[in-house]
Image (cartoon, rainbow, N blue to C red; front, side):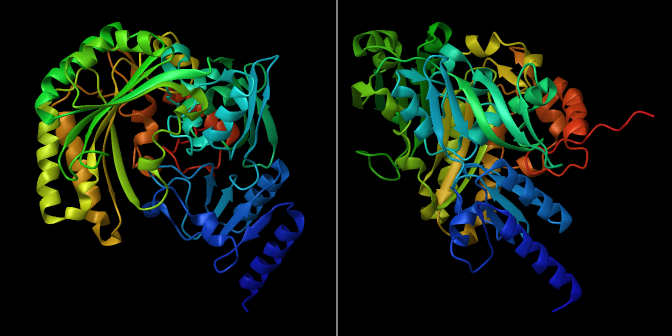
Length: 483
């Protein structure tokens, strides 16, 4: 064994002795679990996976990686479209195994959440006290990634983004220091982490504001034939102009839906109303008037089940490639049809890519817009909808083709839809795309993503991570020291 290998082994044994959690290497029990991700295409072969139980464990794992000259990645829930939670031949700090708790303080209306928790436990714990916060609409998504990148959910129309309801975080810095950040303590770090992602350290705990939530809500799935496309888009545009804060809507076009002929494009609308069914149907009248072919209504859906409805079609496993766009205006029928035609051409030659489509998430934006752009690092407080084109598949040999084609579909959609060209606020402009929907987040142009907030982000980076240890998600370049 070489001297350097002996040094590494000694350091590893010391780490194992120090941790209250565990560290695994390739071939060890638990390693495959440690590198598994929501999308198989984001799996990377880490040299070490650390499962910390405490903040001190996180600090020790960080120290070990830095001493060994290894890159670091942080696993919260493993949903990152870009694979930012994975690292080849480096060290993964996996928060999901142990730091996955949630507890509620009903008197203060606060929910305390571990950095490795998923939204499922947050919804459950909150609703035990009749409380909820802005959670992700797929509840096996990690709390950490969604929150640090901004965070949209069905309650966004009423309460804004997840970061707008974050009141405190606990962060382990690259130096090993553990700090509490809020409006009074380390306010710059608190600002930067709300939208600036995992660029500053490992967030091991979030504290969220919670709000009284009725026990049941109205949700309906509406399917339309493709000849209704233009009428449906017009209806959605009209709905968007008057939608209230207790409404939300996702719409898209897919080729594999329950009750429909596989491979045949079908329009889907998922409509949410935080109230009773009669009021919801009245509020969504314009959408109903288009004439759905099939309706699957849940008139008294327990709120705690709301964010599980989309779990199955977004299940773990298989390969996924998704590219987001942020629209500044209404999507045209021409744009959707052009994308669908381009997808059909690819599917003809590769039938296994039938799970390809388009999806938009539309929430009333008033609560988002009420927050000043400079109040958080997030730079996409615009008026449009968050859209995505996607392909779910199994064959690794198709990775290159899928990535090329999905990018082309996004280009077509952007070419025919008013989209944002720079970060900002309101009708003027918005985020180039919602940062959590960018498959190129590990190597993006952060200045473009964060817009006018980027200068301050660089200063915060210099303060808390001057050596750029955390660099896996829209990496921020630390500001240079002034002479």
